[in-house]
Amino acid sequence: MKHLESVRHQLMERELLGPNAGRYGSPDELMLVSAGPISHLSQFSLLCGPTTRRVTIRQPPEEIVKAAEPHSPLSGETRLEECIPFTFQREIWNGCEWETECSILDASLASGLRAICSKTESIFPGDIPPSIPFNGPFWAGALAYELLQLTQPLRLQNPPQEHELLCVLWEIDRCIVHRKGDDSMVVLSTDTAWAQNVERCLQESPVEYPSVEIKRSKKPISNCTDEEHAEIVRKVHSAIVDGQLYQLNYGRSWEGEILSEPWDVFSHSVASNP
Image 1 (tube, rainbow, N blue to C red):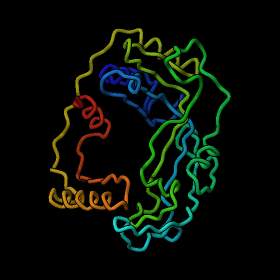
Image 2: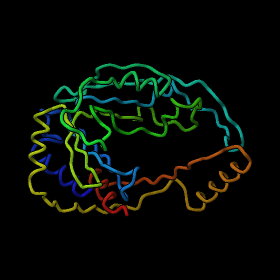
Image 3: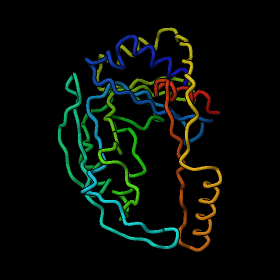
Image 4: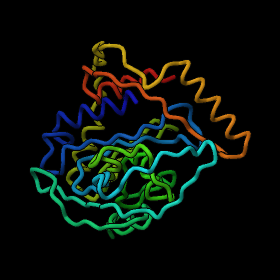
């Protein structure tokens, strides 16, 4: 991760990534880190380059997707309802900002993404190591748990706020793959000029950038106490024993002000993760 973070800084200084890389694409950044020991599940990490297309899904207005009436699934009260269509929006980077290219309505996450995440016929040039599962541009990003509204016939009692971002996926046609096995970097890009400039950066001696100090902020506030959390776990356990549930993941959350940049917090979390 430290090596990949160093590469990120070098690319930003050369205007190959970030807000000053406008001739290649948007300032959006995406790094996918596979931490921990090397295994068949953890072989490489990705630093994605400037992007020009992305897909977003947001929570519909409250009048379209209403909250479910109060009921207790832990007590066997299950209410099945048809999924309501959400808007899948594809945007393109016009050199200054993201603008809508097209949008569709779909009540299925799978079919909606298949339709909106159009596949390109482009391929990455050059010899790609067999261990890297990409031969052309691909989509990557983040999806929220609340997208189960598009995968299961269930209505949430506590849905997200309307217009809240539930999914963002970028089409990745420029990236650097860090292969953990031999600590090597592989550049994949349909843009020859970007790839050549990145290769020159990688051939330079690695630059050690000082770690950013995280600014201390107030202690975060949890949505429940330890005692309340323990009681919730007991209720879930009882429901499983009674056969009402097979599994349930309870999401305890903490909220608080972050004084440091989110990217710095992410880098610190990865670096301090054993």
